[in-house]
Image (tube, rainbow, N blue to C red; front, side, top):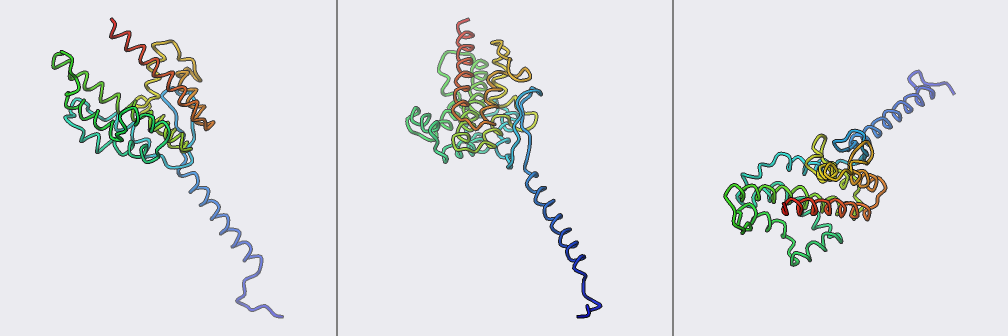
Length: 242
């Protein structure tokens, strides 16, 4: 049968469909990699973690810690506006570690907010001290609560739930802000204890946590946090004793 003058040759149809398919594949690849990011700490040669999902919300915790002016806090309002959403996420997940912490604080899910409010108002600083000393204590209490308490619970909760990208984002923070995360805390302690022996010279704790994140091992993350905060307790006990 004679082909119509307006008919498209089958070879052209195949070529056009192949082109469309290729364009679709390129778009899908671009979409899949658009959310990918490489997270790492301040030590360039340390462990890296590549995400496959968007983690800007989790990375924002480090930004808020870095930007905070702790001395300006007079109550819990900044905590409620900037930090509480991360704690609410942890509470909603209801993981084993969160439940343990909540139980230890009388079962009140708002135990962090209550502590922050008292610290900001300086009502929980009852020892004899000058105003300057109280102000310095207030800043330490607020910063360590936001960076350490909220940070640890966020990392561990996400890990226990199998949300590894979120756990890594909380651990490393946004680009250039790892100093305002528990990663940064470990770098300070390794300098005190001579344990900057991890990959690329980062803290051994940080390398172990980074490997636990890539290996999807929540138990190892908890184990390494126990090491880190044992170091913290010993360091500050020594400083107080002096």
